[in-house]
Image 1 (cartoon, rainbow, N blue to C red):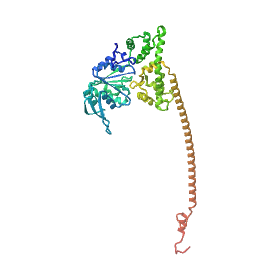
Image 2: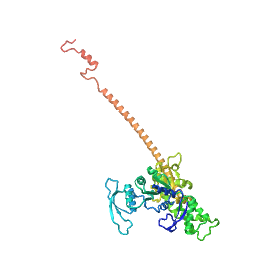
Image 3: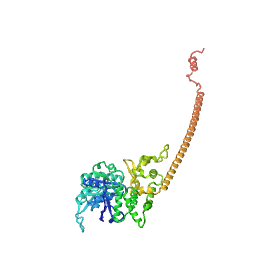
Image 4: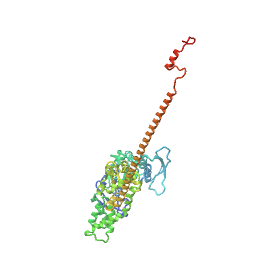
Length: 496
């Protein structure tokens, strides 16, 4: 590992403060050499890690002598928008044709300048139409008309998951059909992100975790900056700043700059080092507290909804977790357990909603205006991680008791409302059951009365019918009639 004070070139990869003339860079074993080997092998490079850990600095340093373009991704981009911006960064003008109905492709007529370095307007020629959704068309055009060899997709995490998946599949096609190399830079913690997006990238890409900084490397950064500005911090102060940097080079850079500014004219000998470091951290937190407290409140909205409840459970568990466990990640099962107010009660919130919030945590933050993301979810390991080390610094040194109290109070109020609603529902169900039983009894009584009335009517009808059916004249259906008929003398016969 070497530490170098670099020149004032515009491609200086890392600087402390806004002055690029004070740019420095520290190489790291297992990071810089891995990047170089991947480029030499022609494989795509995926640089990931927490925010503000030197990912872009690593990319700029390693590509300083290579023609490359950088595409800044955003949440509103589609795949065709990404490729259109790639061609635009390559100085290739496009005239986008109108999309045909019921067609998913988007074609464009390409105007390519034959001399990019000319001061005057270069002669243009019209190239054939290309499909902006076809990565082969885009890369073939760049190969023929430019000297660019690397395409960098910066802030890849901002893209929607569907767009990320499509681009990941396109990287496989680019590897097989083009010598151009893609460098993907994003904020996430899971090492399997690209393989989850596309298993075809295994063996065709190299993953580099740029967020891992050892205390030795961080100390080298601080010393390199001290040499650049010509001033030095007392070793105990520097050591303490390294320990409080949360393993983040961005935090250490900011803290070192503030410390050198605040130490002017002060004696830091004896027992004054620790109070001075606390003052530096407090100075940093003064700017961070407002934004992070807003994030905590914004992450869960107090509007009654299933996802809001799930987000409240996630945030409350996060705030109650100690810093060391937060750095390692919070397991899904532990978060789900927080959604149960007691083992013998029903879950406070539907576990499927918690899973939905976790798996879509980046989009969930984006919809709430959180940029860049603070939380990331490792789908394969089912771990929720903080990818903003400054938020860890805030949780460690700033009090969040008010936020936890607000969350606890809101959740208890929701639980009380649920209990009241449950009791009201039970009372309503009891009242409805009692009403149904009363209606059934009344219906059965009415049926019995109706049956009795019908039986009386039938009996009366039978009696009436029996009473009205006596022997009729000429009716020989009875034995008496038959006997009389036999005893009656025939016509003309003498009577006895």
